[in-house]
Length: 172
Image (cartoon, rainbow, N blue to C red):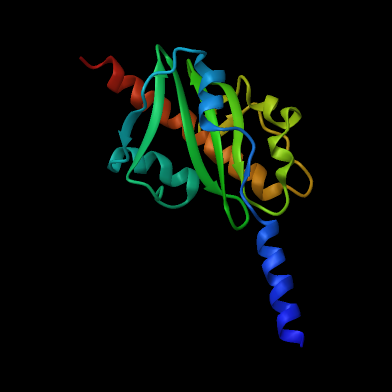
């Protein structure tokens, strides 16, 4: 009798950790570029790109390529990074070496979802890199330490990758 009860509780616990789509990628891109969203471009994560990402994530980024969107000097990135146990998907817009927009697109953790609220996300507007750190510093959220750290890593990655693609866009 205990076994079926235990299985029911286990199934409910797994169902509670469902993907929460906060914003669709299309809605994020429309917010970033308006109606002039272009087709995605591809950045192959070659040795140079992986060397730039490794210090941020403390491992190689697990994809061979990333899609990004560009309009003029503005680029948009949709990245994934693990919070505590599950990936968080977030979108970032970079222009002129500074963050213009940050959004949580899909949240999969059981706690720490306060990072999706505008009060937290507005801290990223205007942030740039000072060496390997975000400047100004992003304030944390009690109980969401790992989710905040994930967002900071992804923001650093977007700010690091944007100049790599700007160089490629300037090359005829």
